[in-house]
Length: 399
Image (cartoon, rainbow, N blue to C red; front, side, top):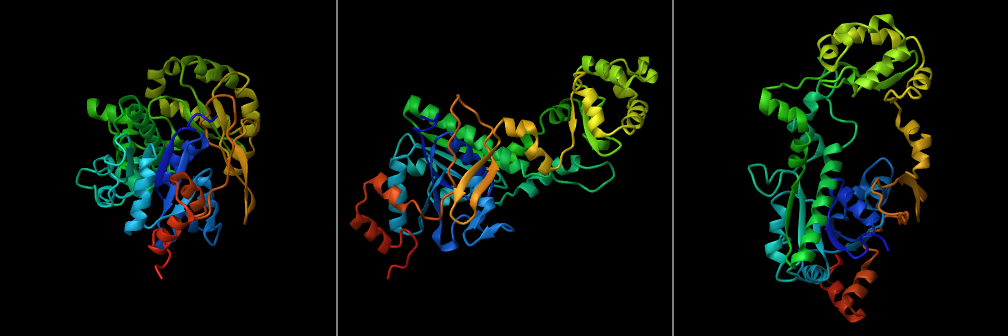
């Protein structure tokens, strides 16, 4: 039995951030019933190019494996009645909508507790459900700019740059998943549910971590660093080699001593480079020596010397190299599912590992394909399903 096999989540979610959080819960065994709005064609992630076909896309597969899908028009009384029945039989309602929308469509705890006093309502929004930006849509790219990330990213003197991945979305999804699990734990203990107000903005600001603390307490002004250097530890950055780039980091004094031994440069045995503080003070002189040294050999040759010596280091891979890395394969981080259009879909696994049994991965659902499953779950007979269908609950015309 998977760790979360006894948790049922009603997910009113779309695109990236929300589905990224719930896909890990599904991988852990939670039953995630995805509500898709039929008039707009469901989750917009189904249509993300370039690898899309009809209502299927590899983007959607990535964020929705292991879930179930129900097309449900919540603007109709019949559709709302089905949602109410699901809430009565669920542990959580999970959404990623604009901050003012959960209350507008009636999925906050005060609006649902009459159906289920223990329901947990976890809302992942762009800016939270309070504050002056609550009604604004939140997107990863915008949040990276607003929270100061883009100003910190890139080479000094260059334009602001975003991360190569949607890290605000992904981090926000993981924070929401943690909040949901904490809420369900408390609700089972106390018998009372709650709202979980999670936002991408809060997540992005919180991830400023120690540079924020340095600024708030000591007036520190974060700046971009050459070659992605650490703001205080020297050396800890990328270095150009004869044929590429490697990352080398000395986060402890013992690593610096090991690096000096590998490089065997008499100039490094200098009091100016003896400690964290002095290496930072004389970073320009030190990095000039290191840049010249690393440029003399290939990346593979340097790593063959650094790794056995215990110096933290690694290649700067492209995505293809990262996915075929022997450690990626040894950790079973590429998984397969069967799909009626794409055949075998290969994608990356969840990093969440609990216990010894590997998760069983199932493809993402076709839109609305789990109506029969939900009908059985709620005890609907054929007459009840037909009545709901004719009333527009599932998006069909009432005629």
